[in-house]
Image 1: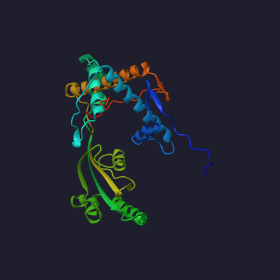
Image 2: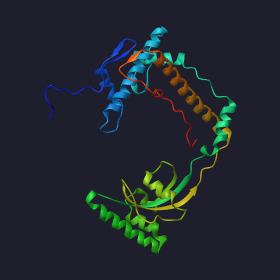
Image 3: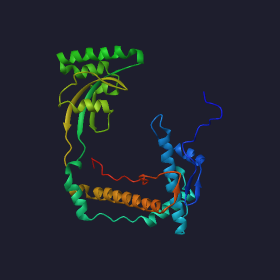
Image 4: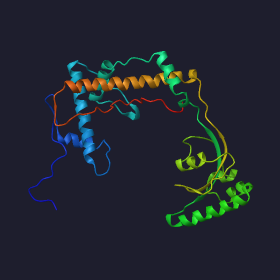
Amino acid sequence: MRRAGNPVKPLFSDLSVNGSVITVKEIAAEAQNHRAPEGKPGLAWRAAAKSLVIRELLLQEAARRRIDASPQKLGNGRRETDAEAIIRQLTEAAIKPSPPSPDEVKAAYDAQPELFRSPTLSEASHILIAVPDPGKEQEAEARAVRLLKELRKDAACFGRLAREHSACSSASSGGALGQLSEGDLVPEFEEAMRLLAPGEIADSPVRTRYGFHIVRLDARAEGQVLPFESVRERINDALEKASWASAGRDFIQGIVARAEISGIDMGSIPDTSRRTAAPSRHL
């Protein structure tokens, strides 16, 4: 029970940014947009406070530069707020990263060409024993184990057993799922496939949210390293985004360093850009 006369101390007090006040109420509202581990709301509050400080500094910098902007239409019928439009205009004017040179693009490829692969393609078949409700899980698993024992005696009956027992629509094709690439299936199923050689059946049923699967890998074509010319533009784009993100952090660090801020230690500056800075593994 809370003692009378001993109010709970707020996680933050009001902040001051070059004399402009950010209230506790504003921080609390912004904190709803920031995730934090359970039991550690202070992390969300700190992230919210930093975000509001940076937003205020950007608006102050835009005012100093006399920047004005008209809101633009965004996706899903949304329109920028006046503040969003002003900050966009400021960052477009102030953040001027250097584009990567052709040599830098080639060097990024040469450093780790194995990152730039076509996706691995697989073909697999399965027999799905569904779990109609939690109380039937052991029964479903036992049924899958019995079918697996039959397959150990005669692997050629896989298609027949799939047509007779599988709860998946692939049953009509003997359990065949067709050509698959990474991400097409749930992680547990894909992990089981990675451990198999073509023609092998997994030693035990694989549990997923759909039920118990008897998994057979039918074929695998490993992804190949792609030639530089086929990925050059995408590497260039990735390096441009990384350069933009770095320049953006430098710009924000500069205005934070020049500001008079009380109520919070800004510490490291969060990456406020919405751009991805790393190239995809599979291009």
